[in-house]
Amino acid sequence: ETATVAVVPGDGIGHEVVPAALEVLDAVADIEFVHAEAGDAVAEQRGTPLPEGTLEAVSEADATLFGATGETSADVILPLRDAVDSFVNVRPARTYPGVDAVQPETDLVILRENTEGVYAGVENRLTEDVSTLTRLVTQSASRRLAEFACDYVESNGHDGFTVAHKNNVMRVTDGLFVDTVREEAAARGVDVDEAYMDAMATHLAMDPAGYDVIVCPNLAGDVLSDLAAGLVGGLGLLPSANIGSERGIFEPVHGCAPDIAGEGIANPSATILSAAMLLEFLGADGAARDVRAAVEATLADGPRTPDLGGTATTDAVAEAVVDRLPEH
Ligand code: NAI
Ligand code: MG
Picture 1 (cartoon, rainbow, N blue to C red):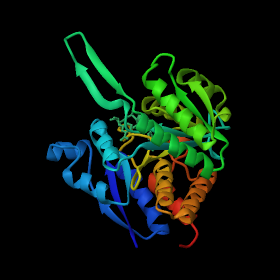
Picture 2: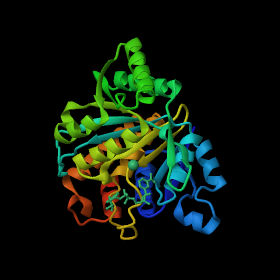
Picture 3: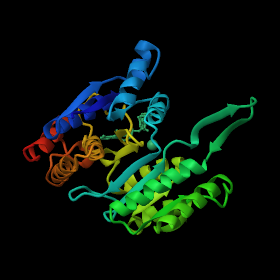
């Protein structure tokens, strides 16, 4: 049966990197695409950044390829993650031959809690002076993340994982998070290291090879994965997967990059690598491997976009990747 994939380019360079990834997907898999809109531009035209039809397309598709949205991104990606019940955001960060990296030894994956923490959306302005934010942590979401982490570690041949938190300050919420994760891992016989998230930021910057799989709350995962992006050569290289029990949304970690949008020079690698994660999610492991290998070869030998020191366009890079794919 042909898989259905919703395609939501969003704003800015989303309209450049998503078509590039679609060319690659087209070359390796038989997929039915459903195109949908979201973001700042749609909000201006239709009064909402997330039209009903888009929410429906994403809710019904087997998977979604998402680009990036602009100022409205919280109003778009958070409800979409909800719509597919995505409880974990998978963010691999590794270096590639041919790409200048601050820390060439980096090869890690961040498993970020994706539904709660400070992003649960409970903020209040109480008075002129006072605003508050309620941080939500549940045992069930922490357990689900831990179960996923244990499965991930086992199926990818890792020794264990490191859980990042700050239970010395957020004793109740991060206390519950860490206790639950530790308990689940113990029940599964998976090794767990622990690190305070602030100390981890230092260690990550200085010795990223010390980390392999990192499990963390929502905000920590957001920040630490952008830090990891800096270690490996920039945001143009980092894919991500929002995984739910039945569906997933695959998107680059970067935003819509208004500073370069429209110039046709955005690096499509992060989005093409996100498409590879999508293929894997759909069970097309061979195609996923081929796409990754083609991206790696292109990063190694060029052409490269300006963020990696090259002069190539987005389209030229996409073409080079497609050219390096075996026949499908
Ligand atoms: P950004 O990721 O859009 O850009 C940061 C810097 O990285 C810019 O200099 C940009 O040119 C560069 N960059 C990003 N992706 C690149 C690529 N593929 N190739 C080459 N260079 C790339 O983050 P920024 O500037 O903080 O946010 C811009 C807009 O994007 C904001 O409106 C923000 O809200 C939104 N955003 C949306 C996200 C989403 O849709 N999931 C995630 C992050 C930001
Ligand atoms: Mg972010």
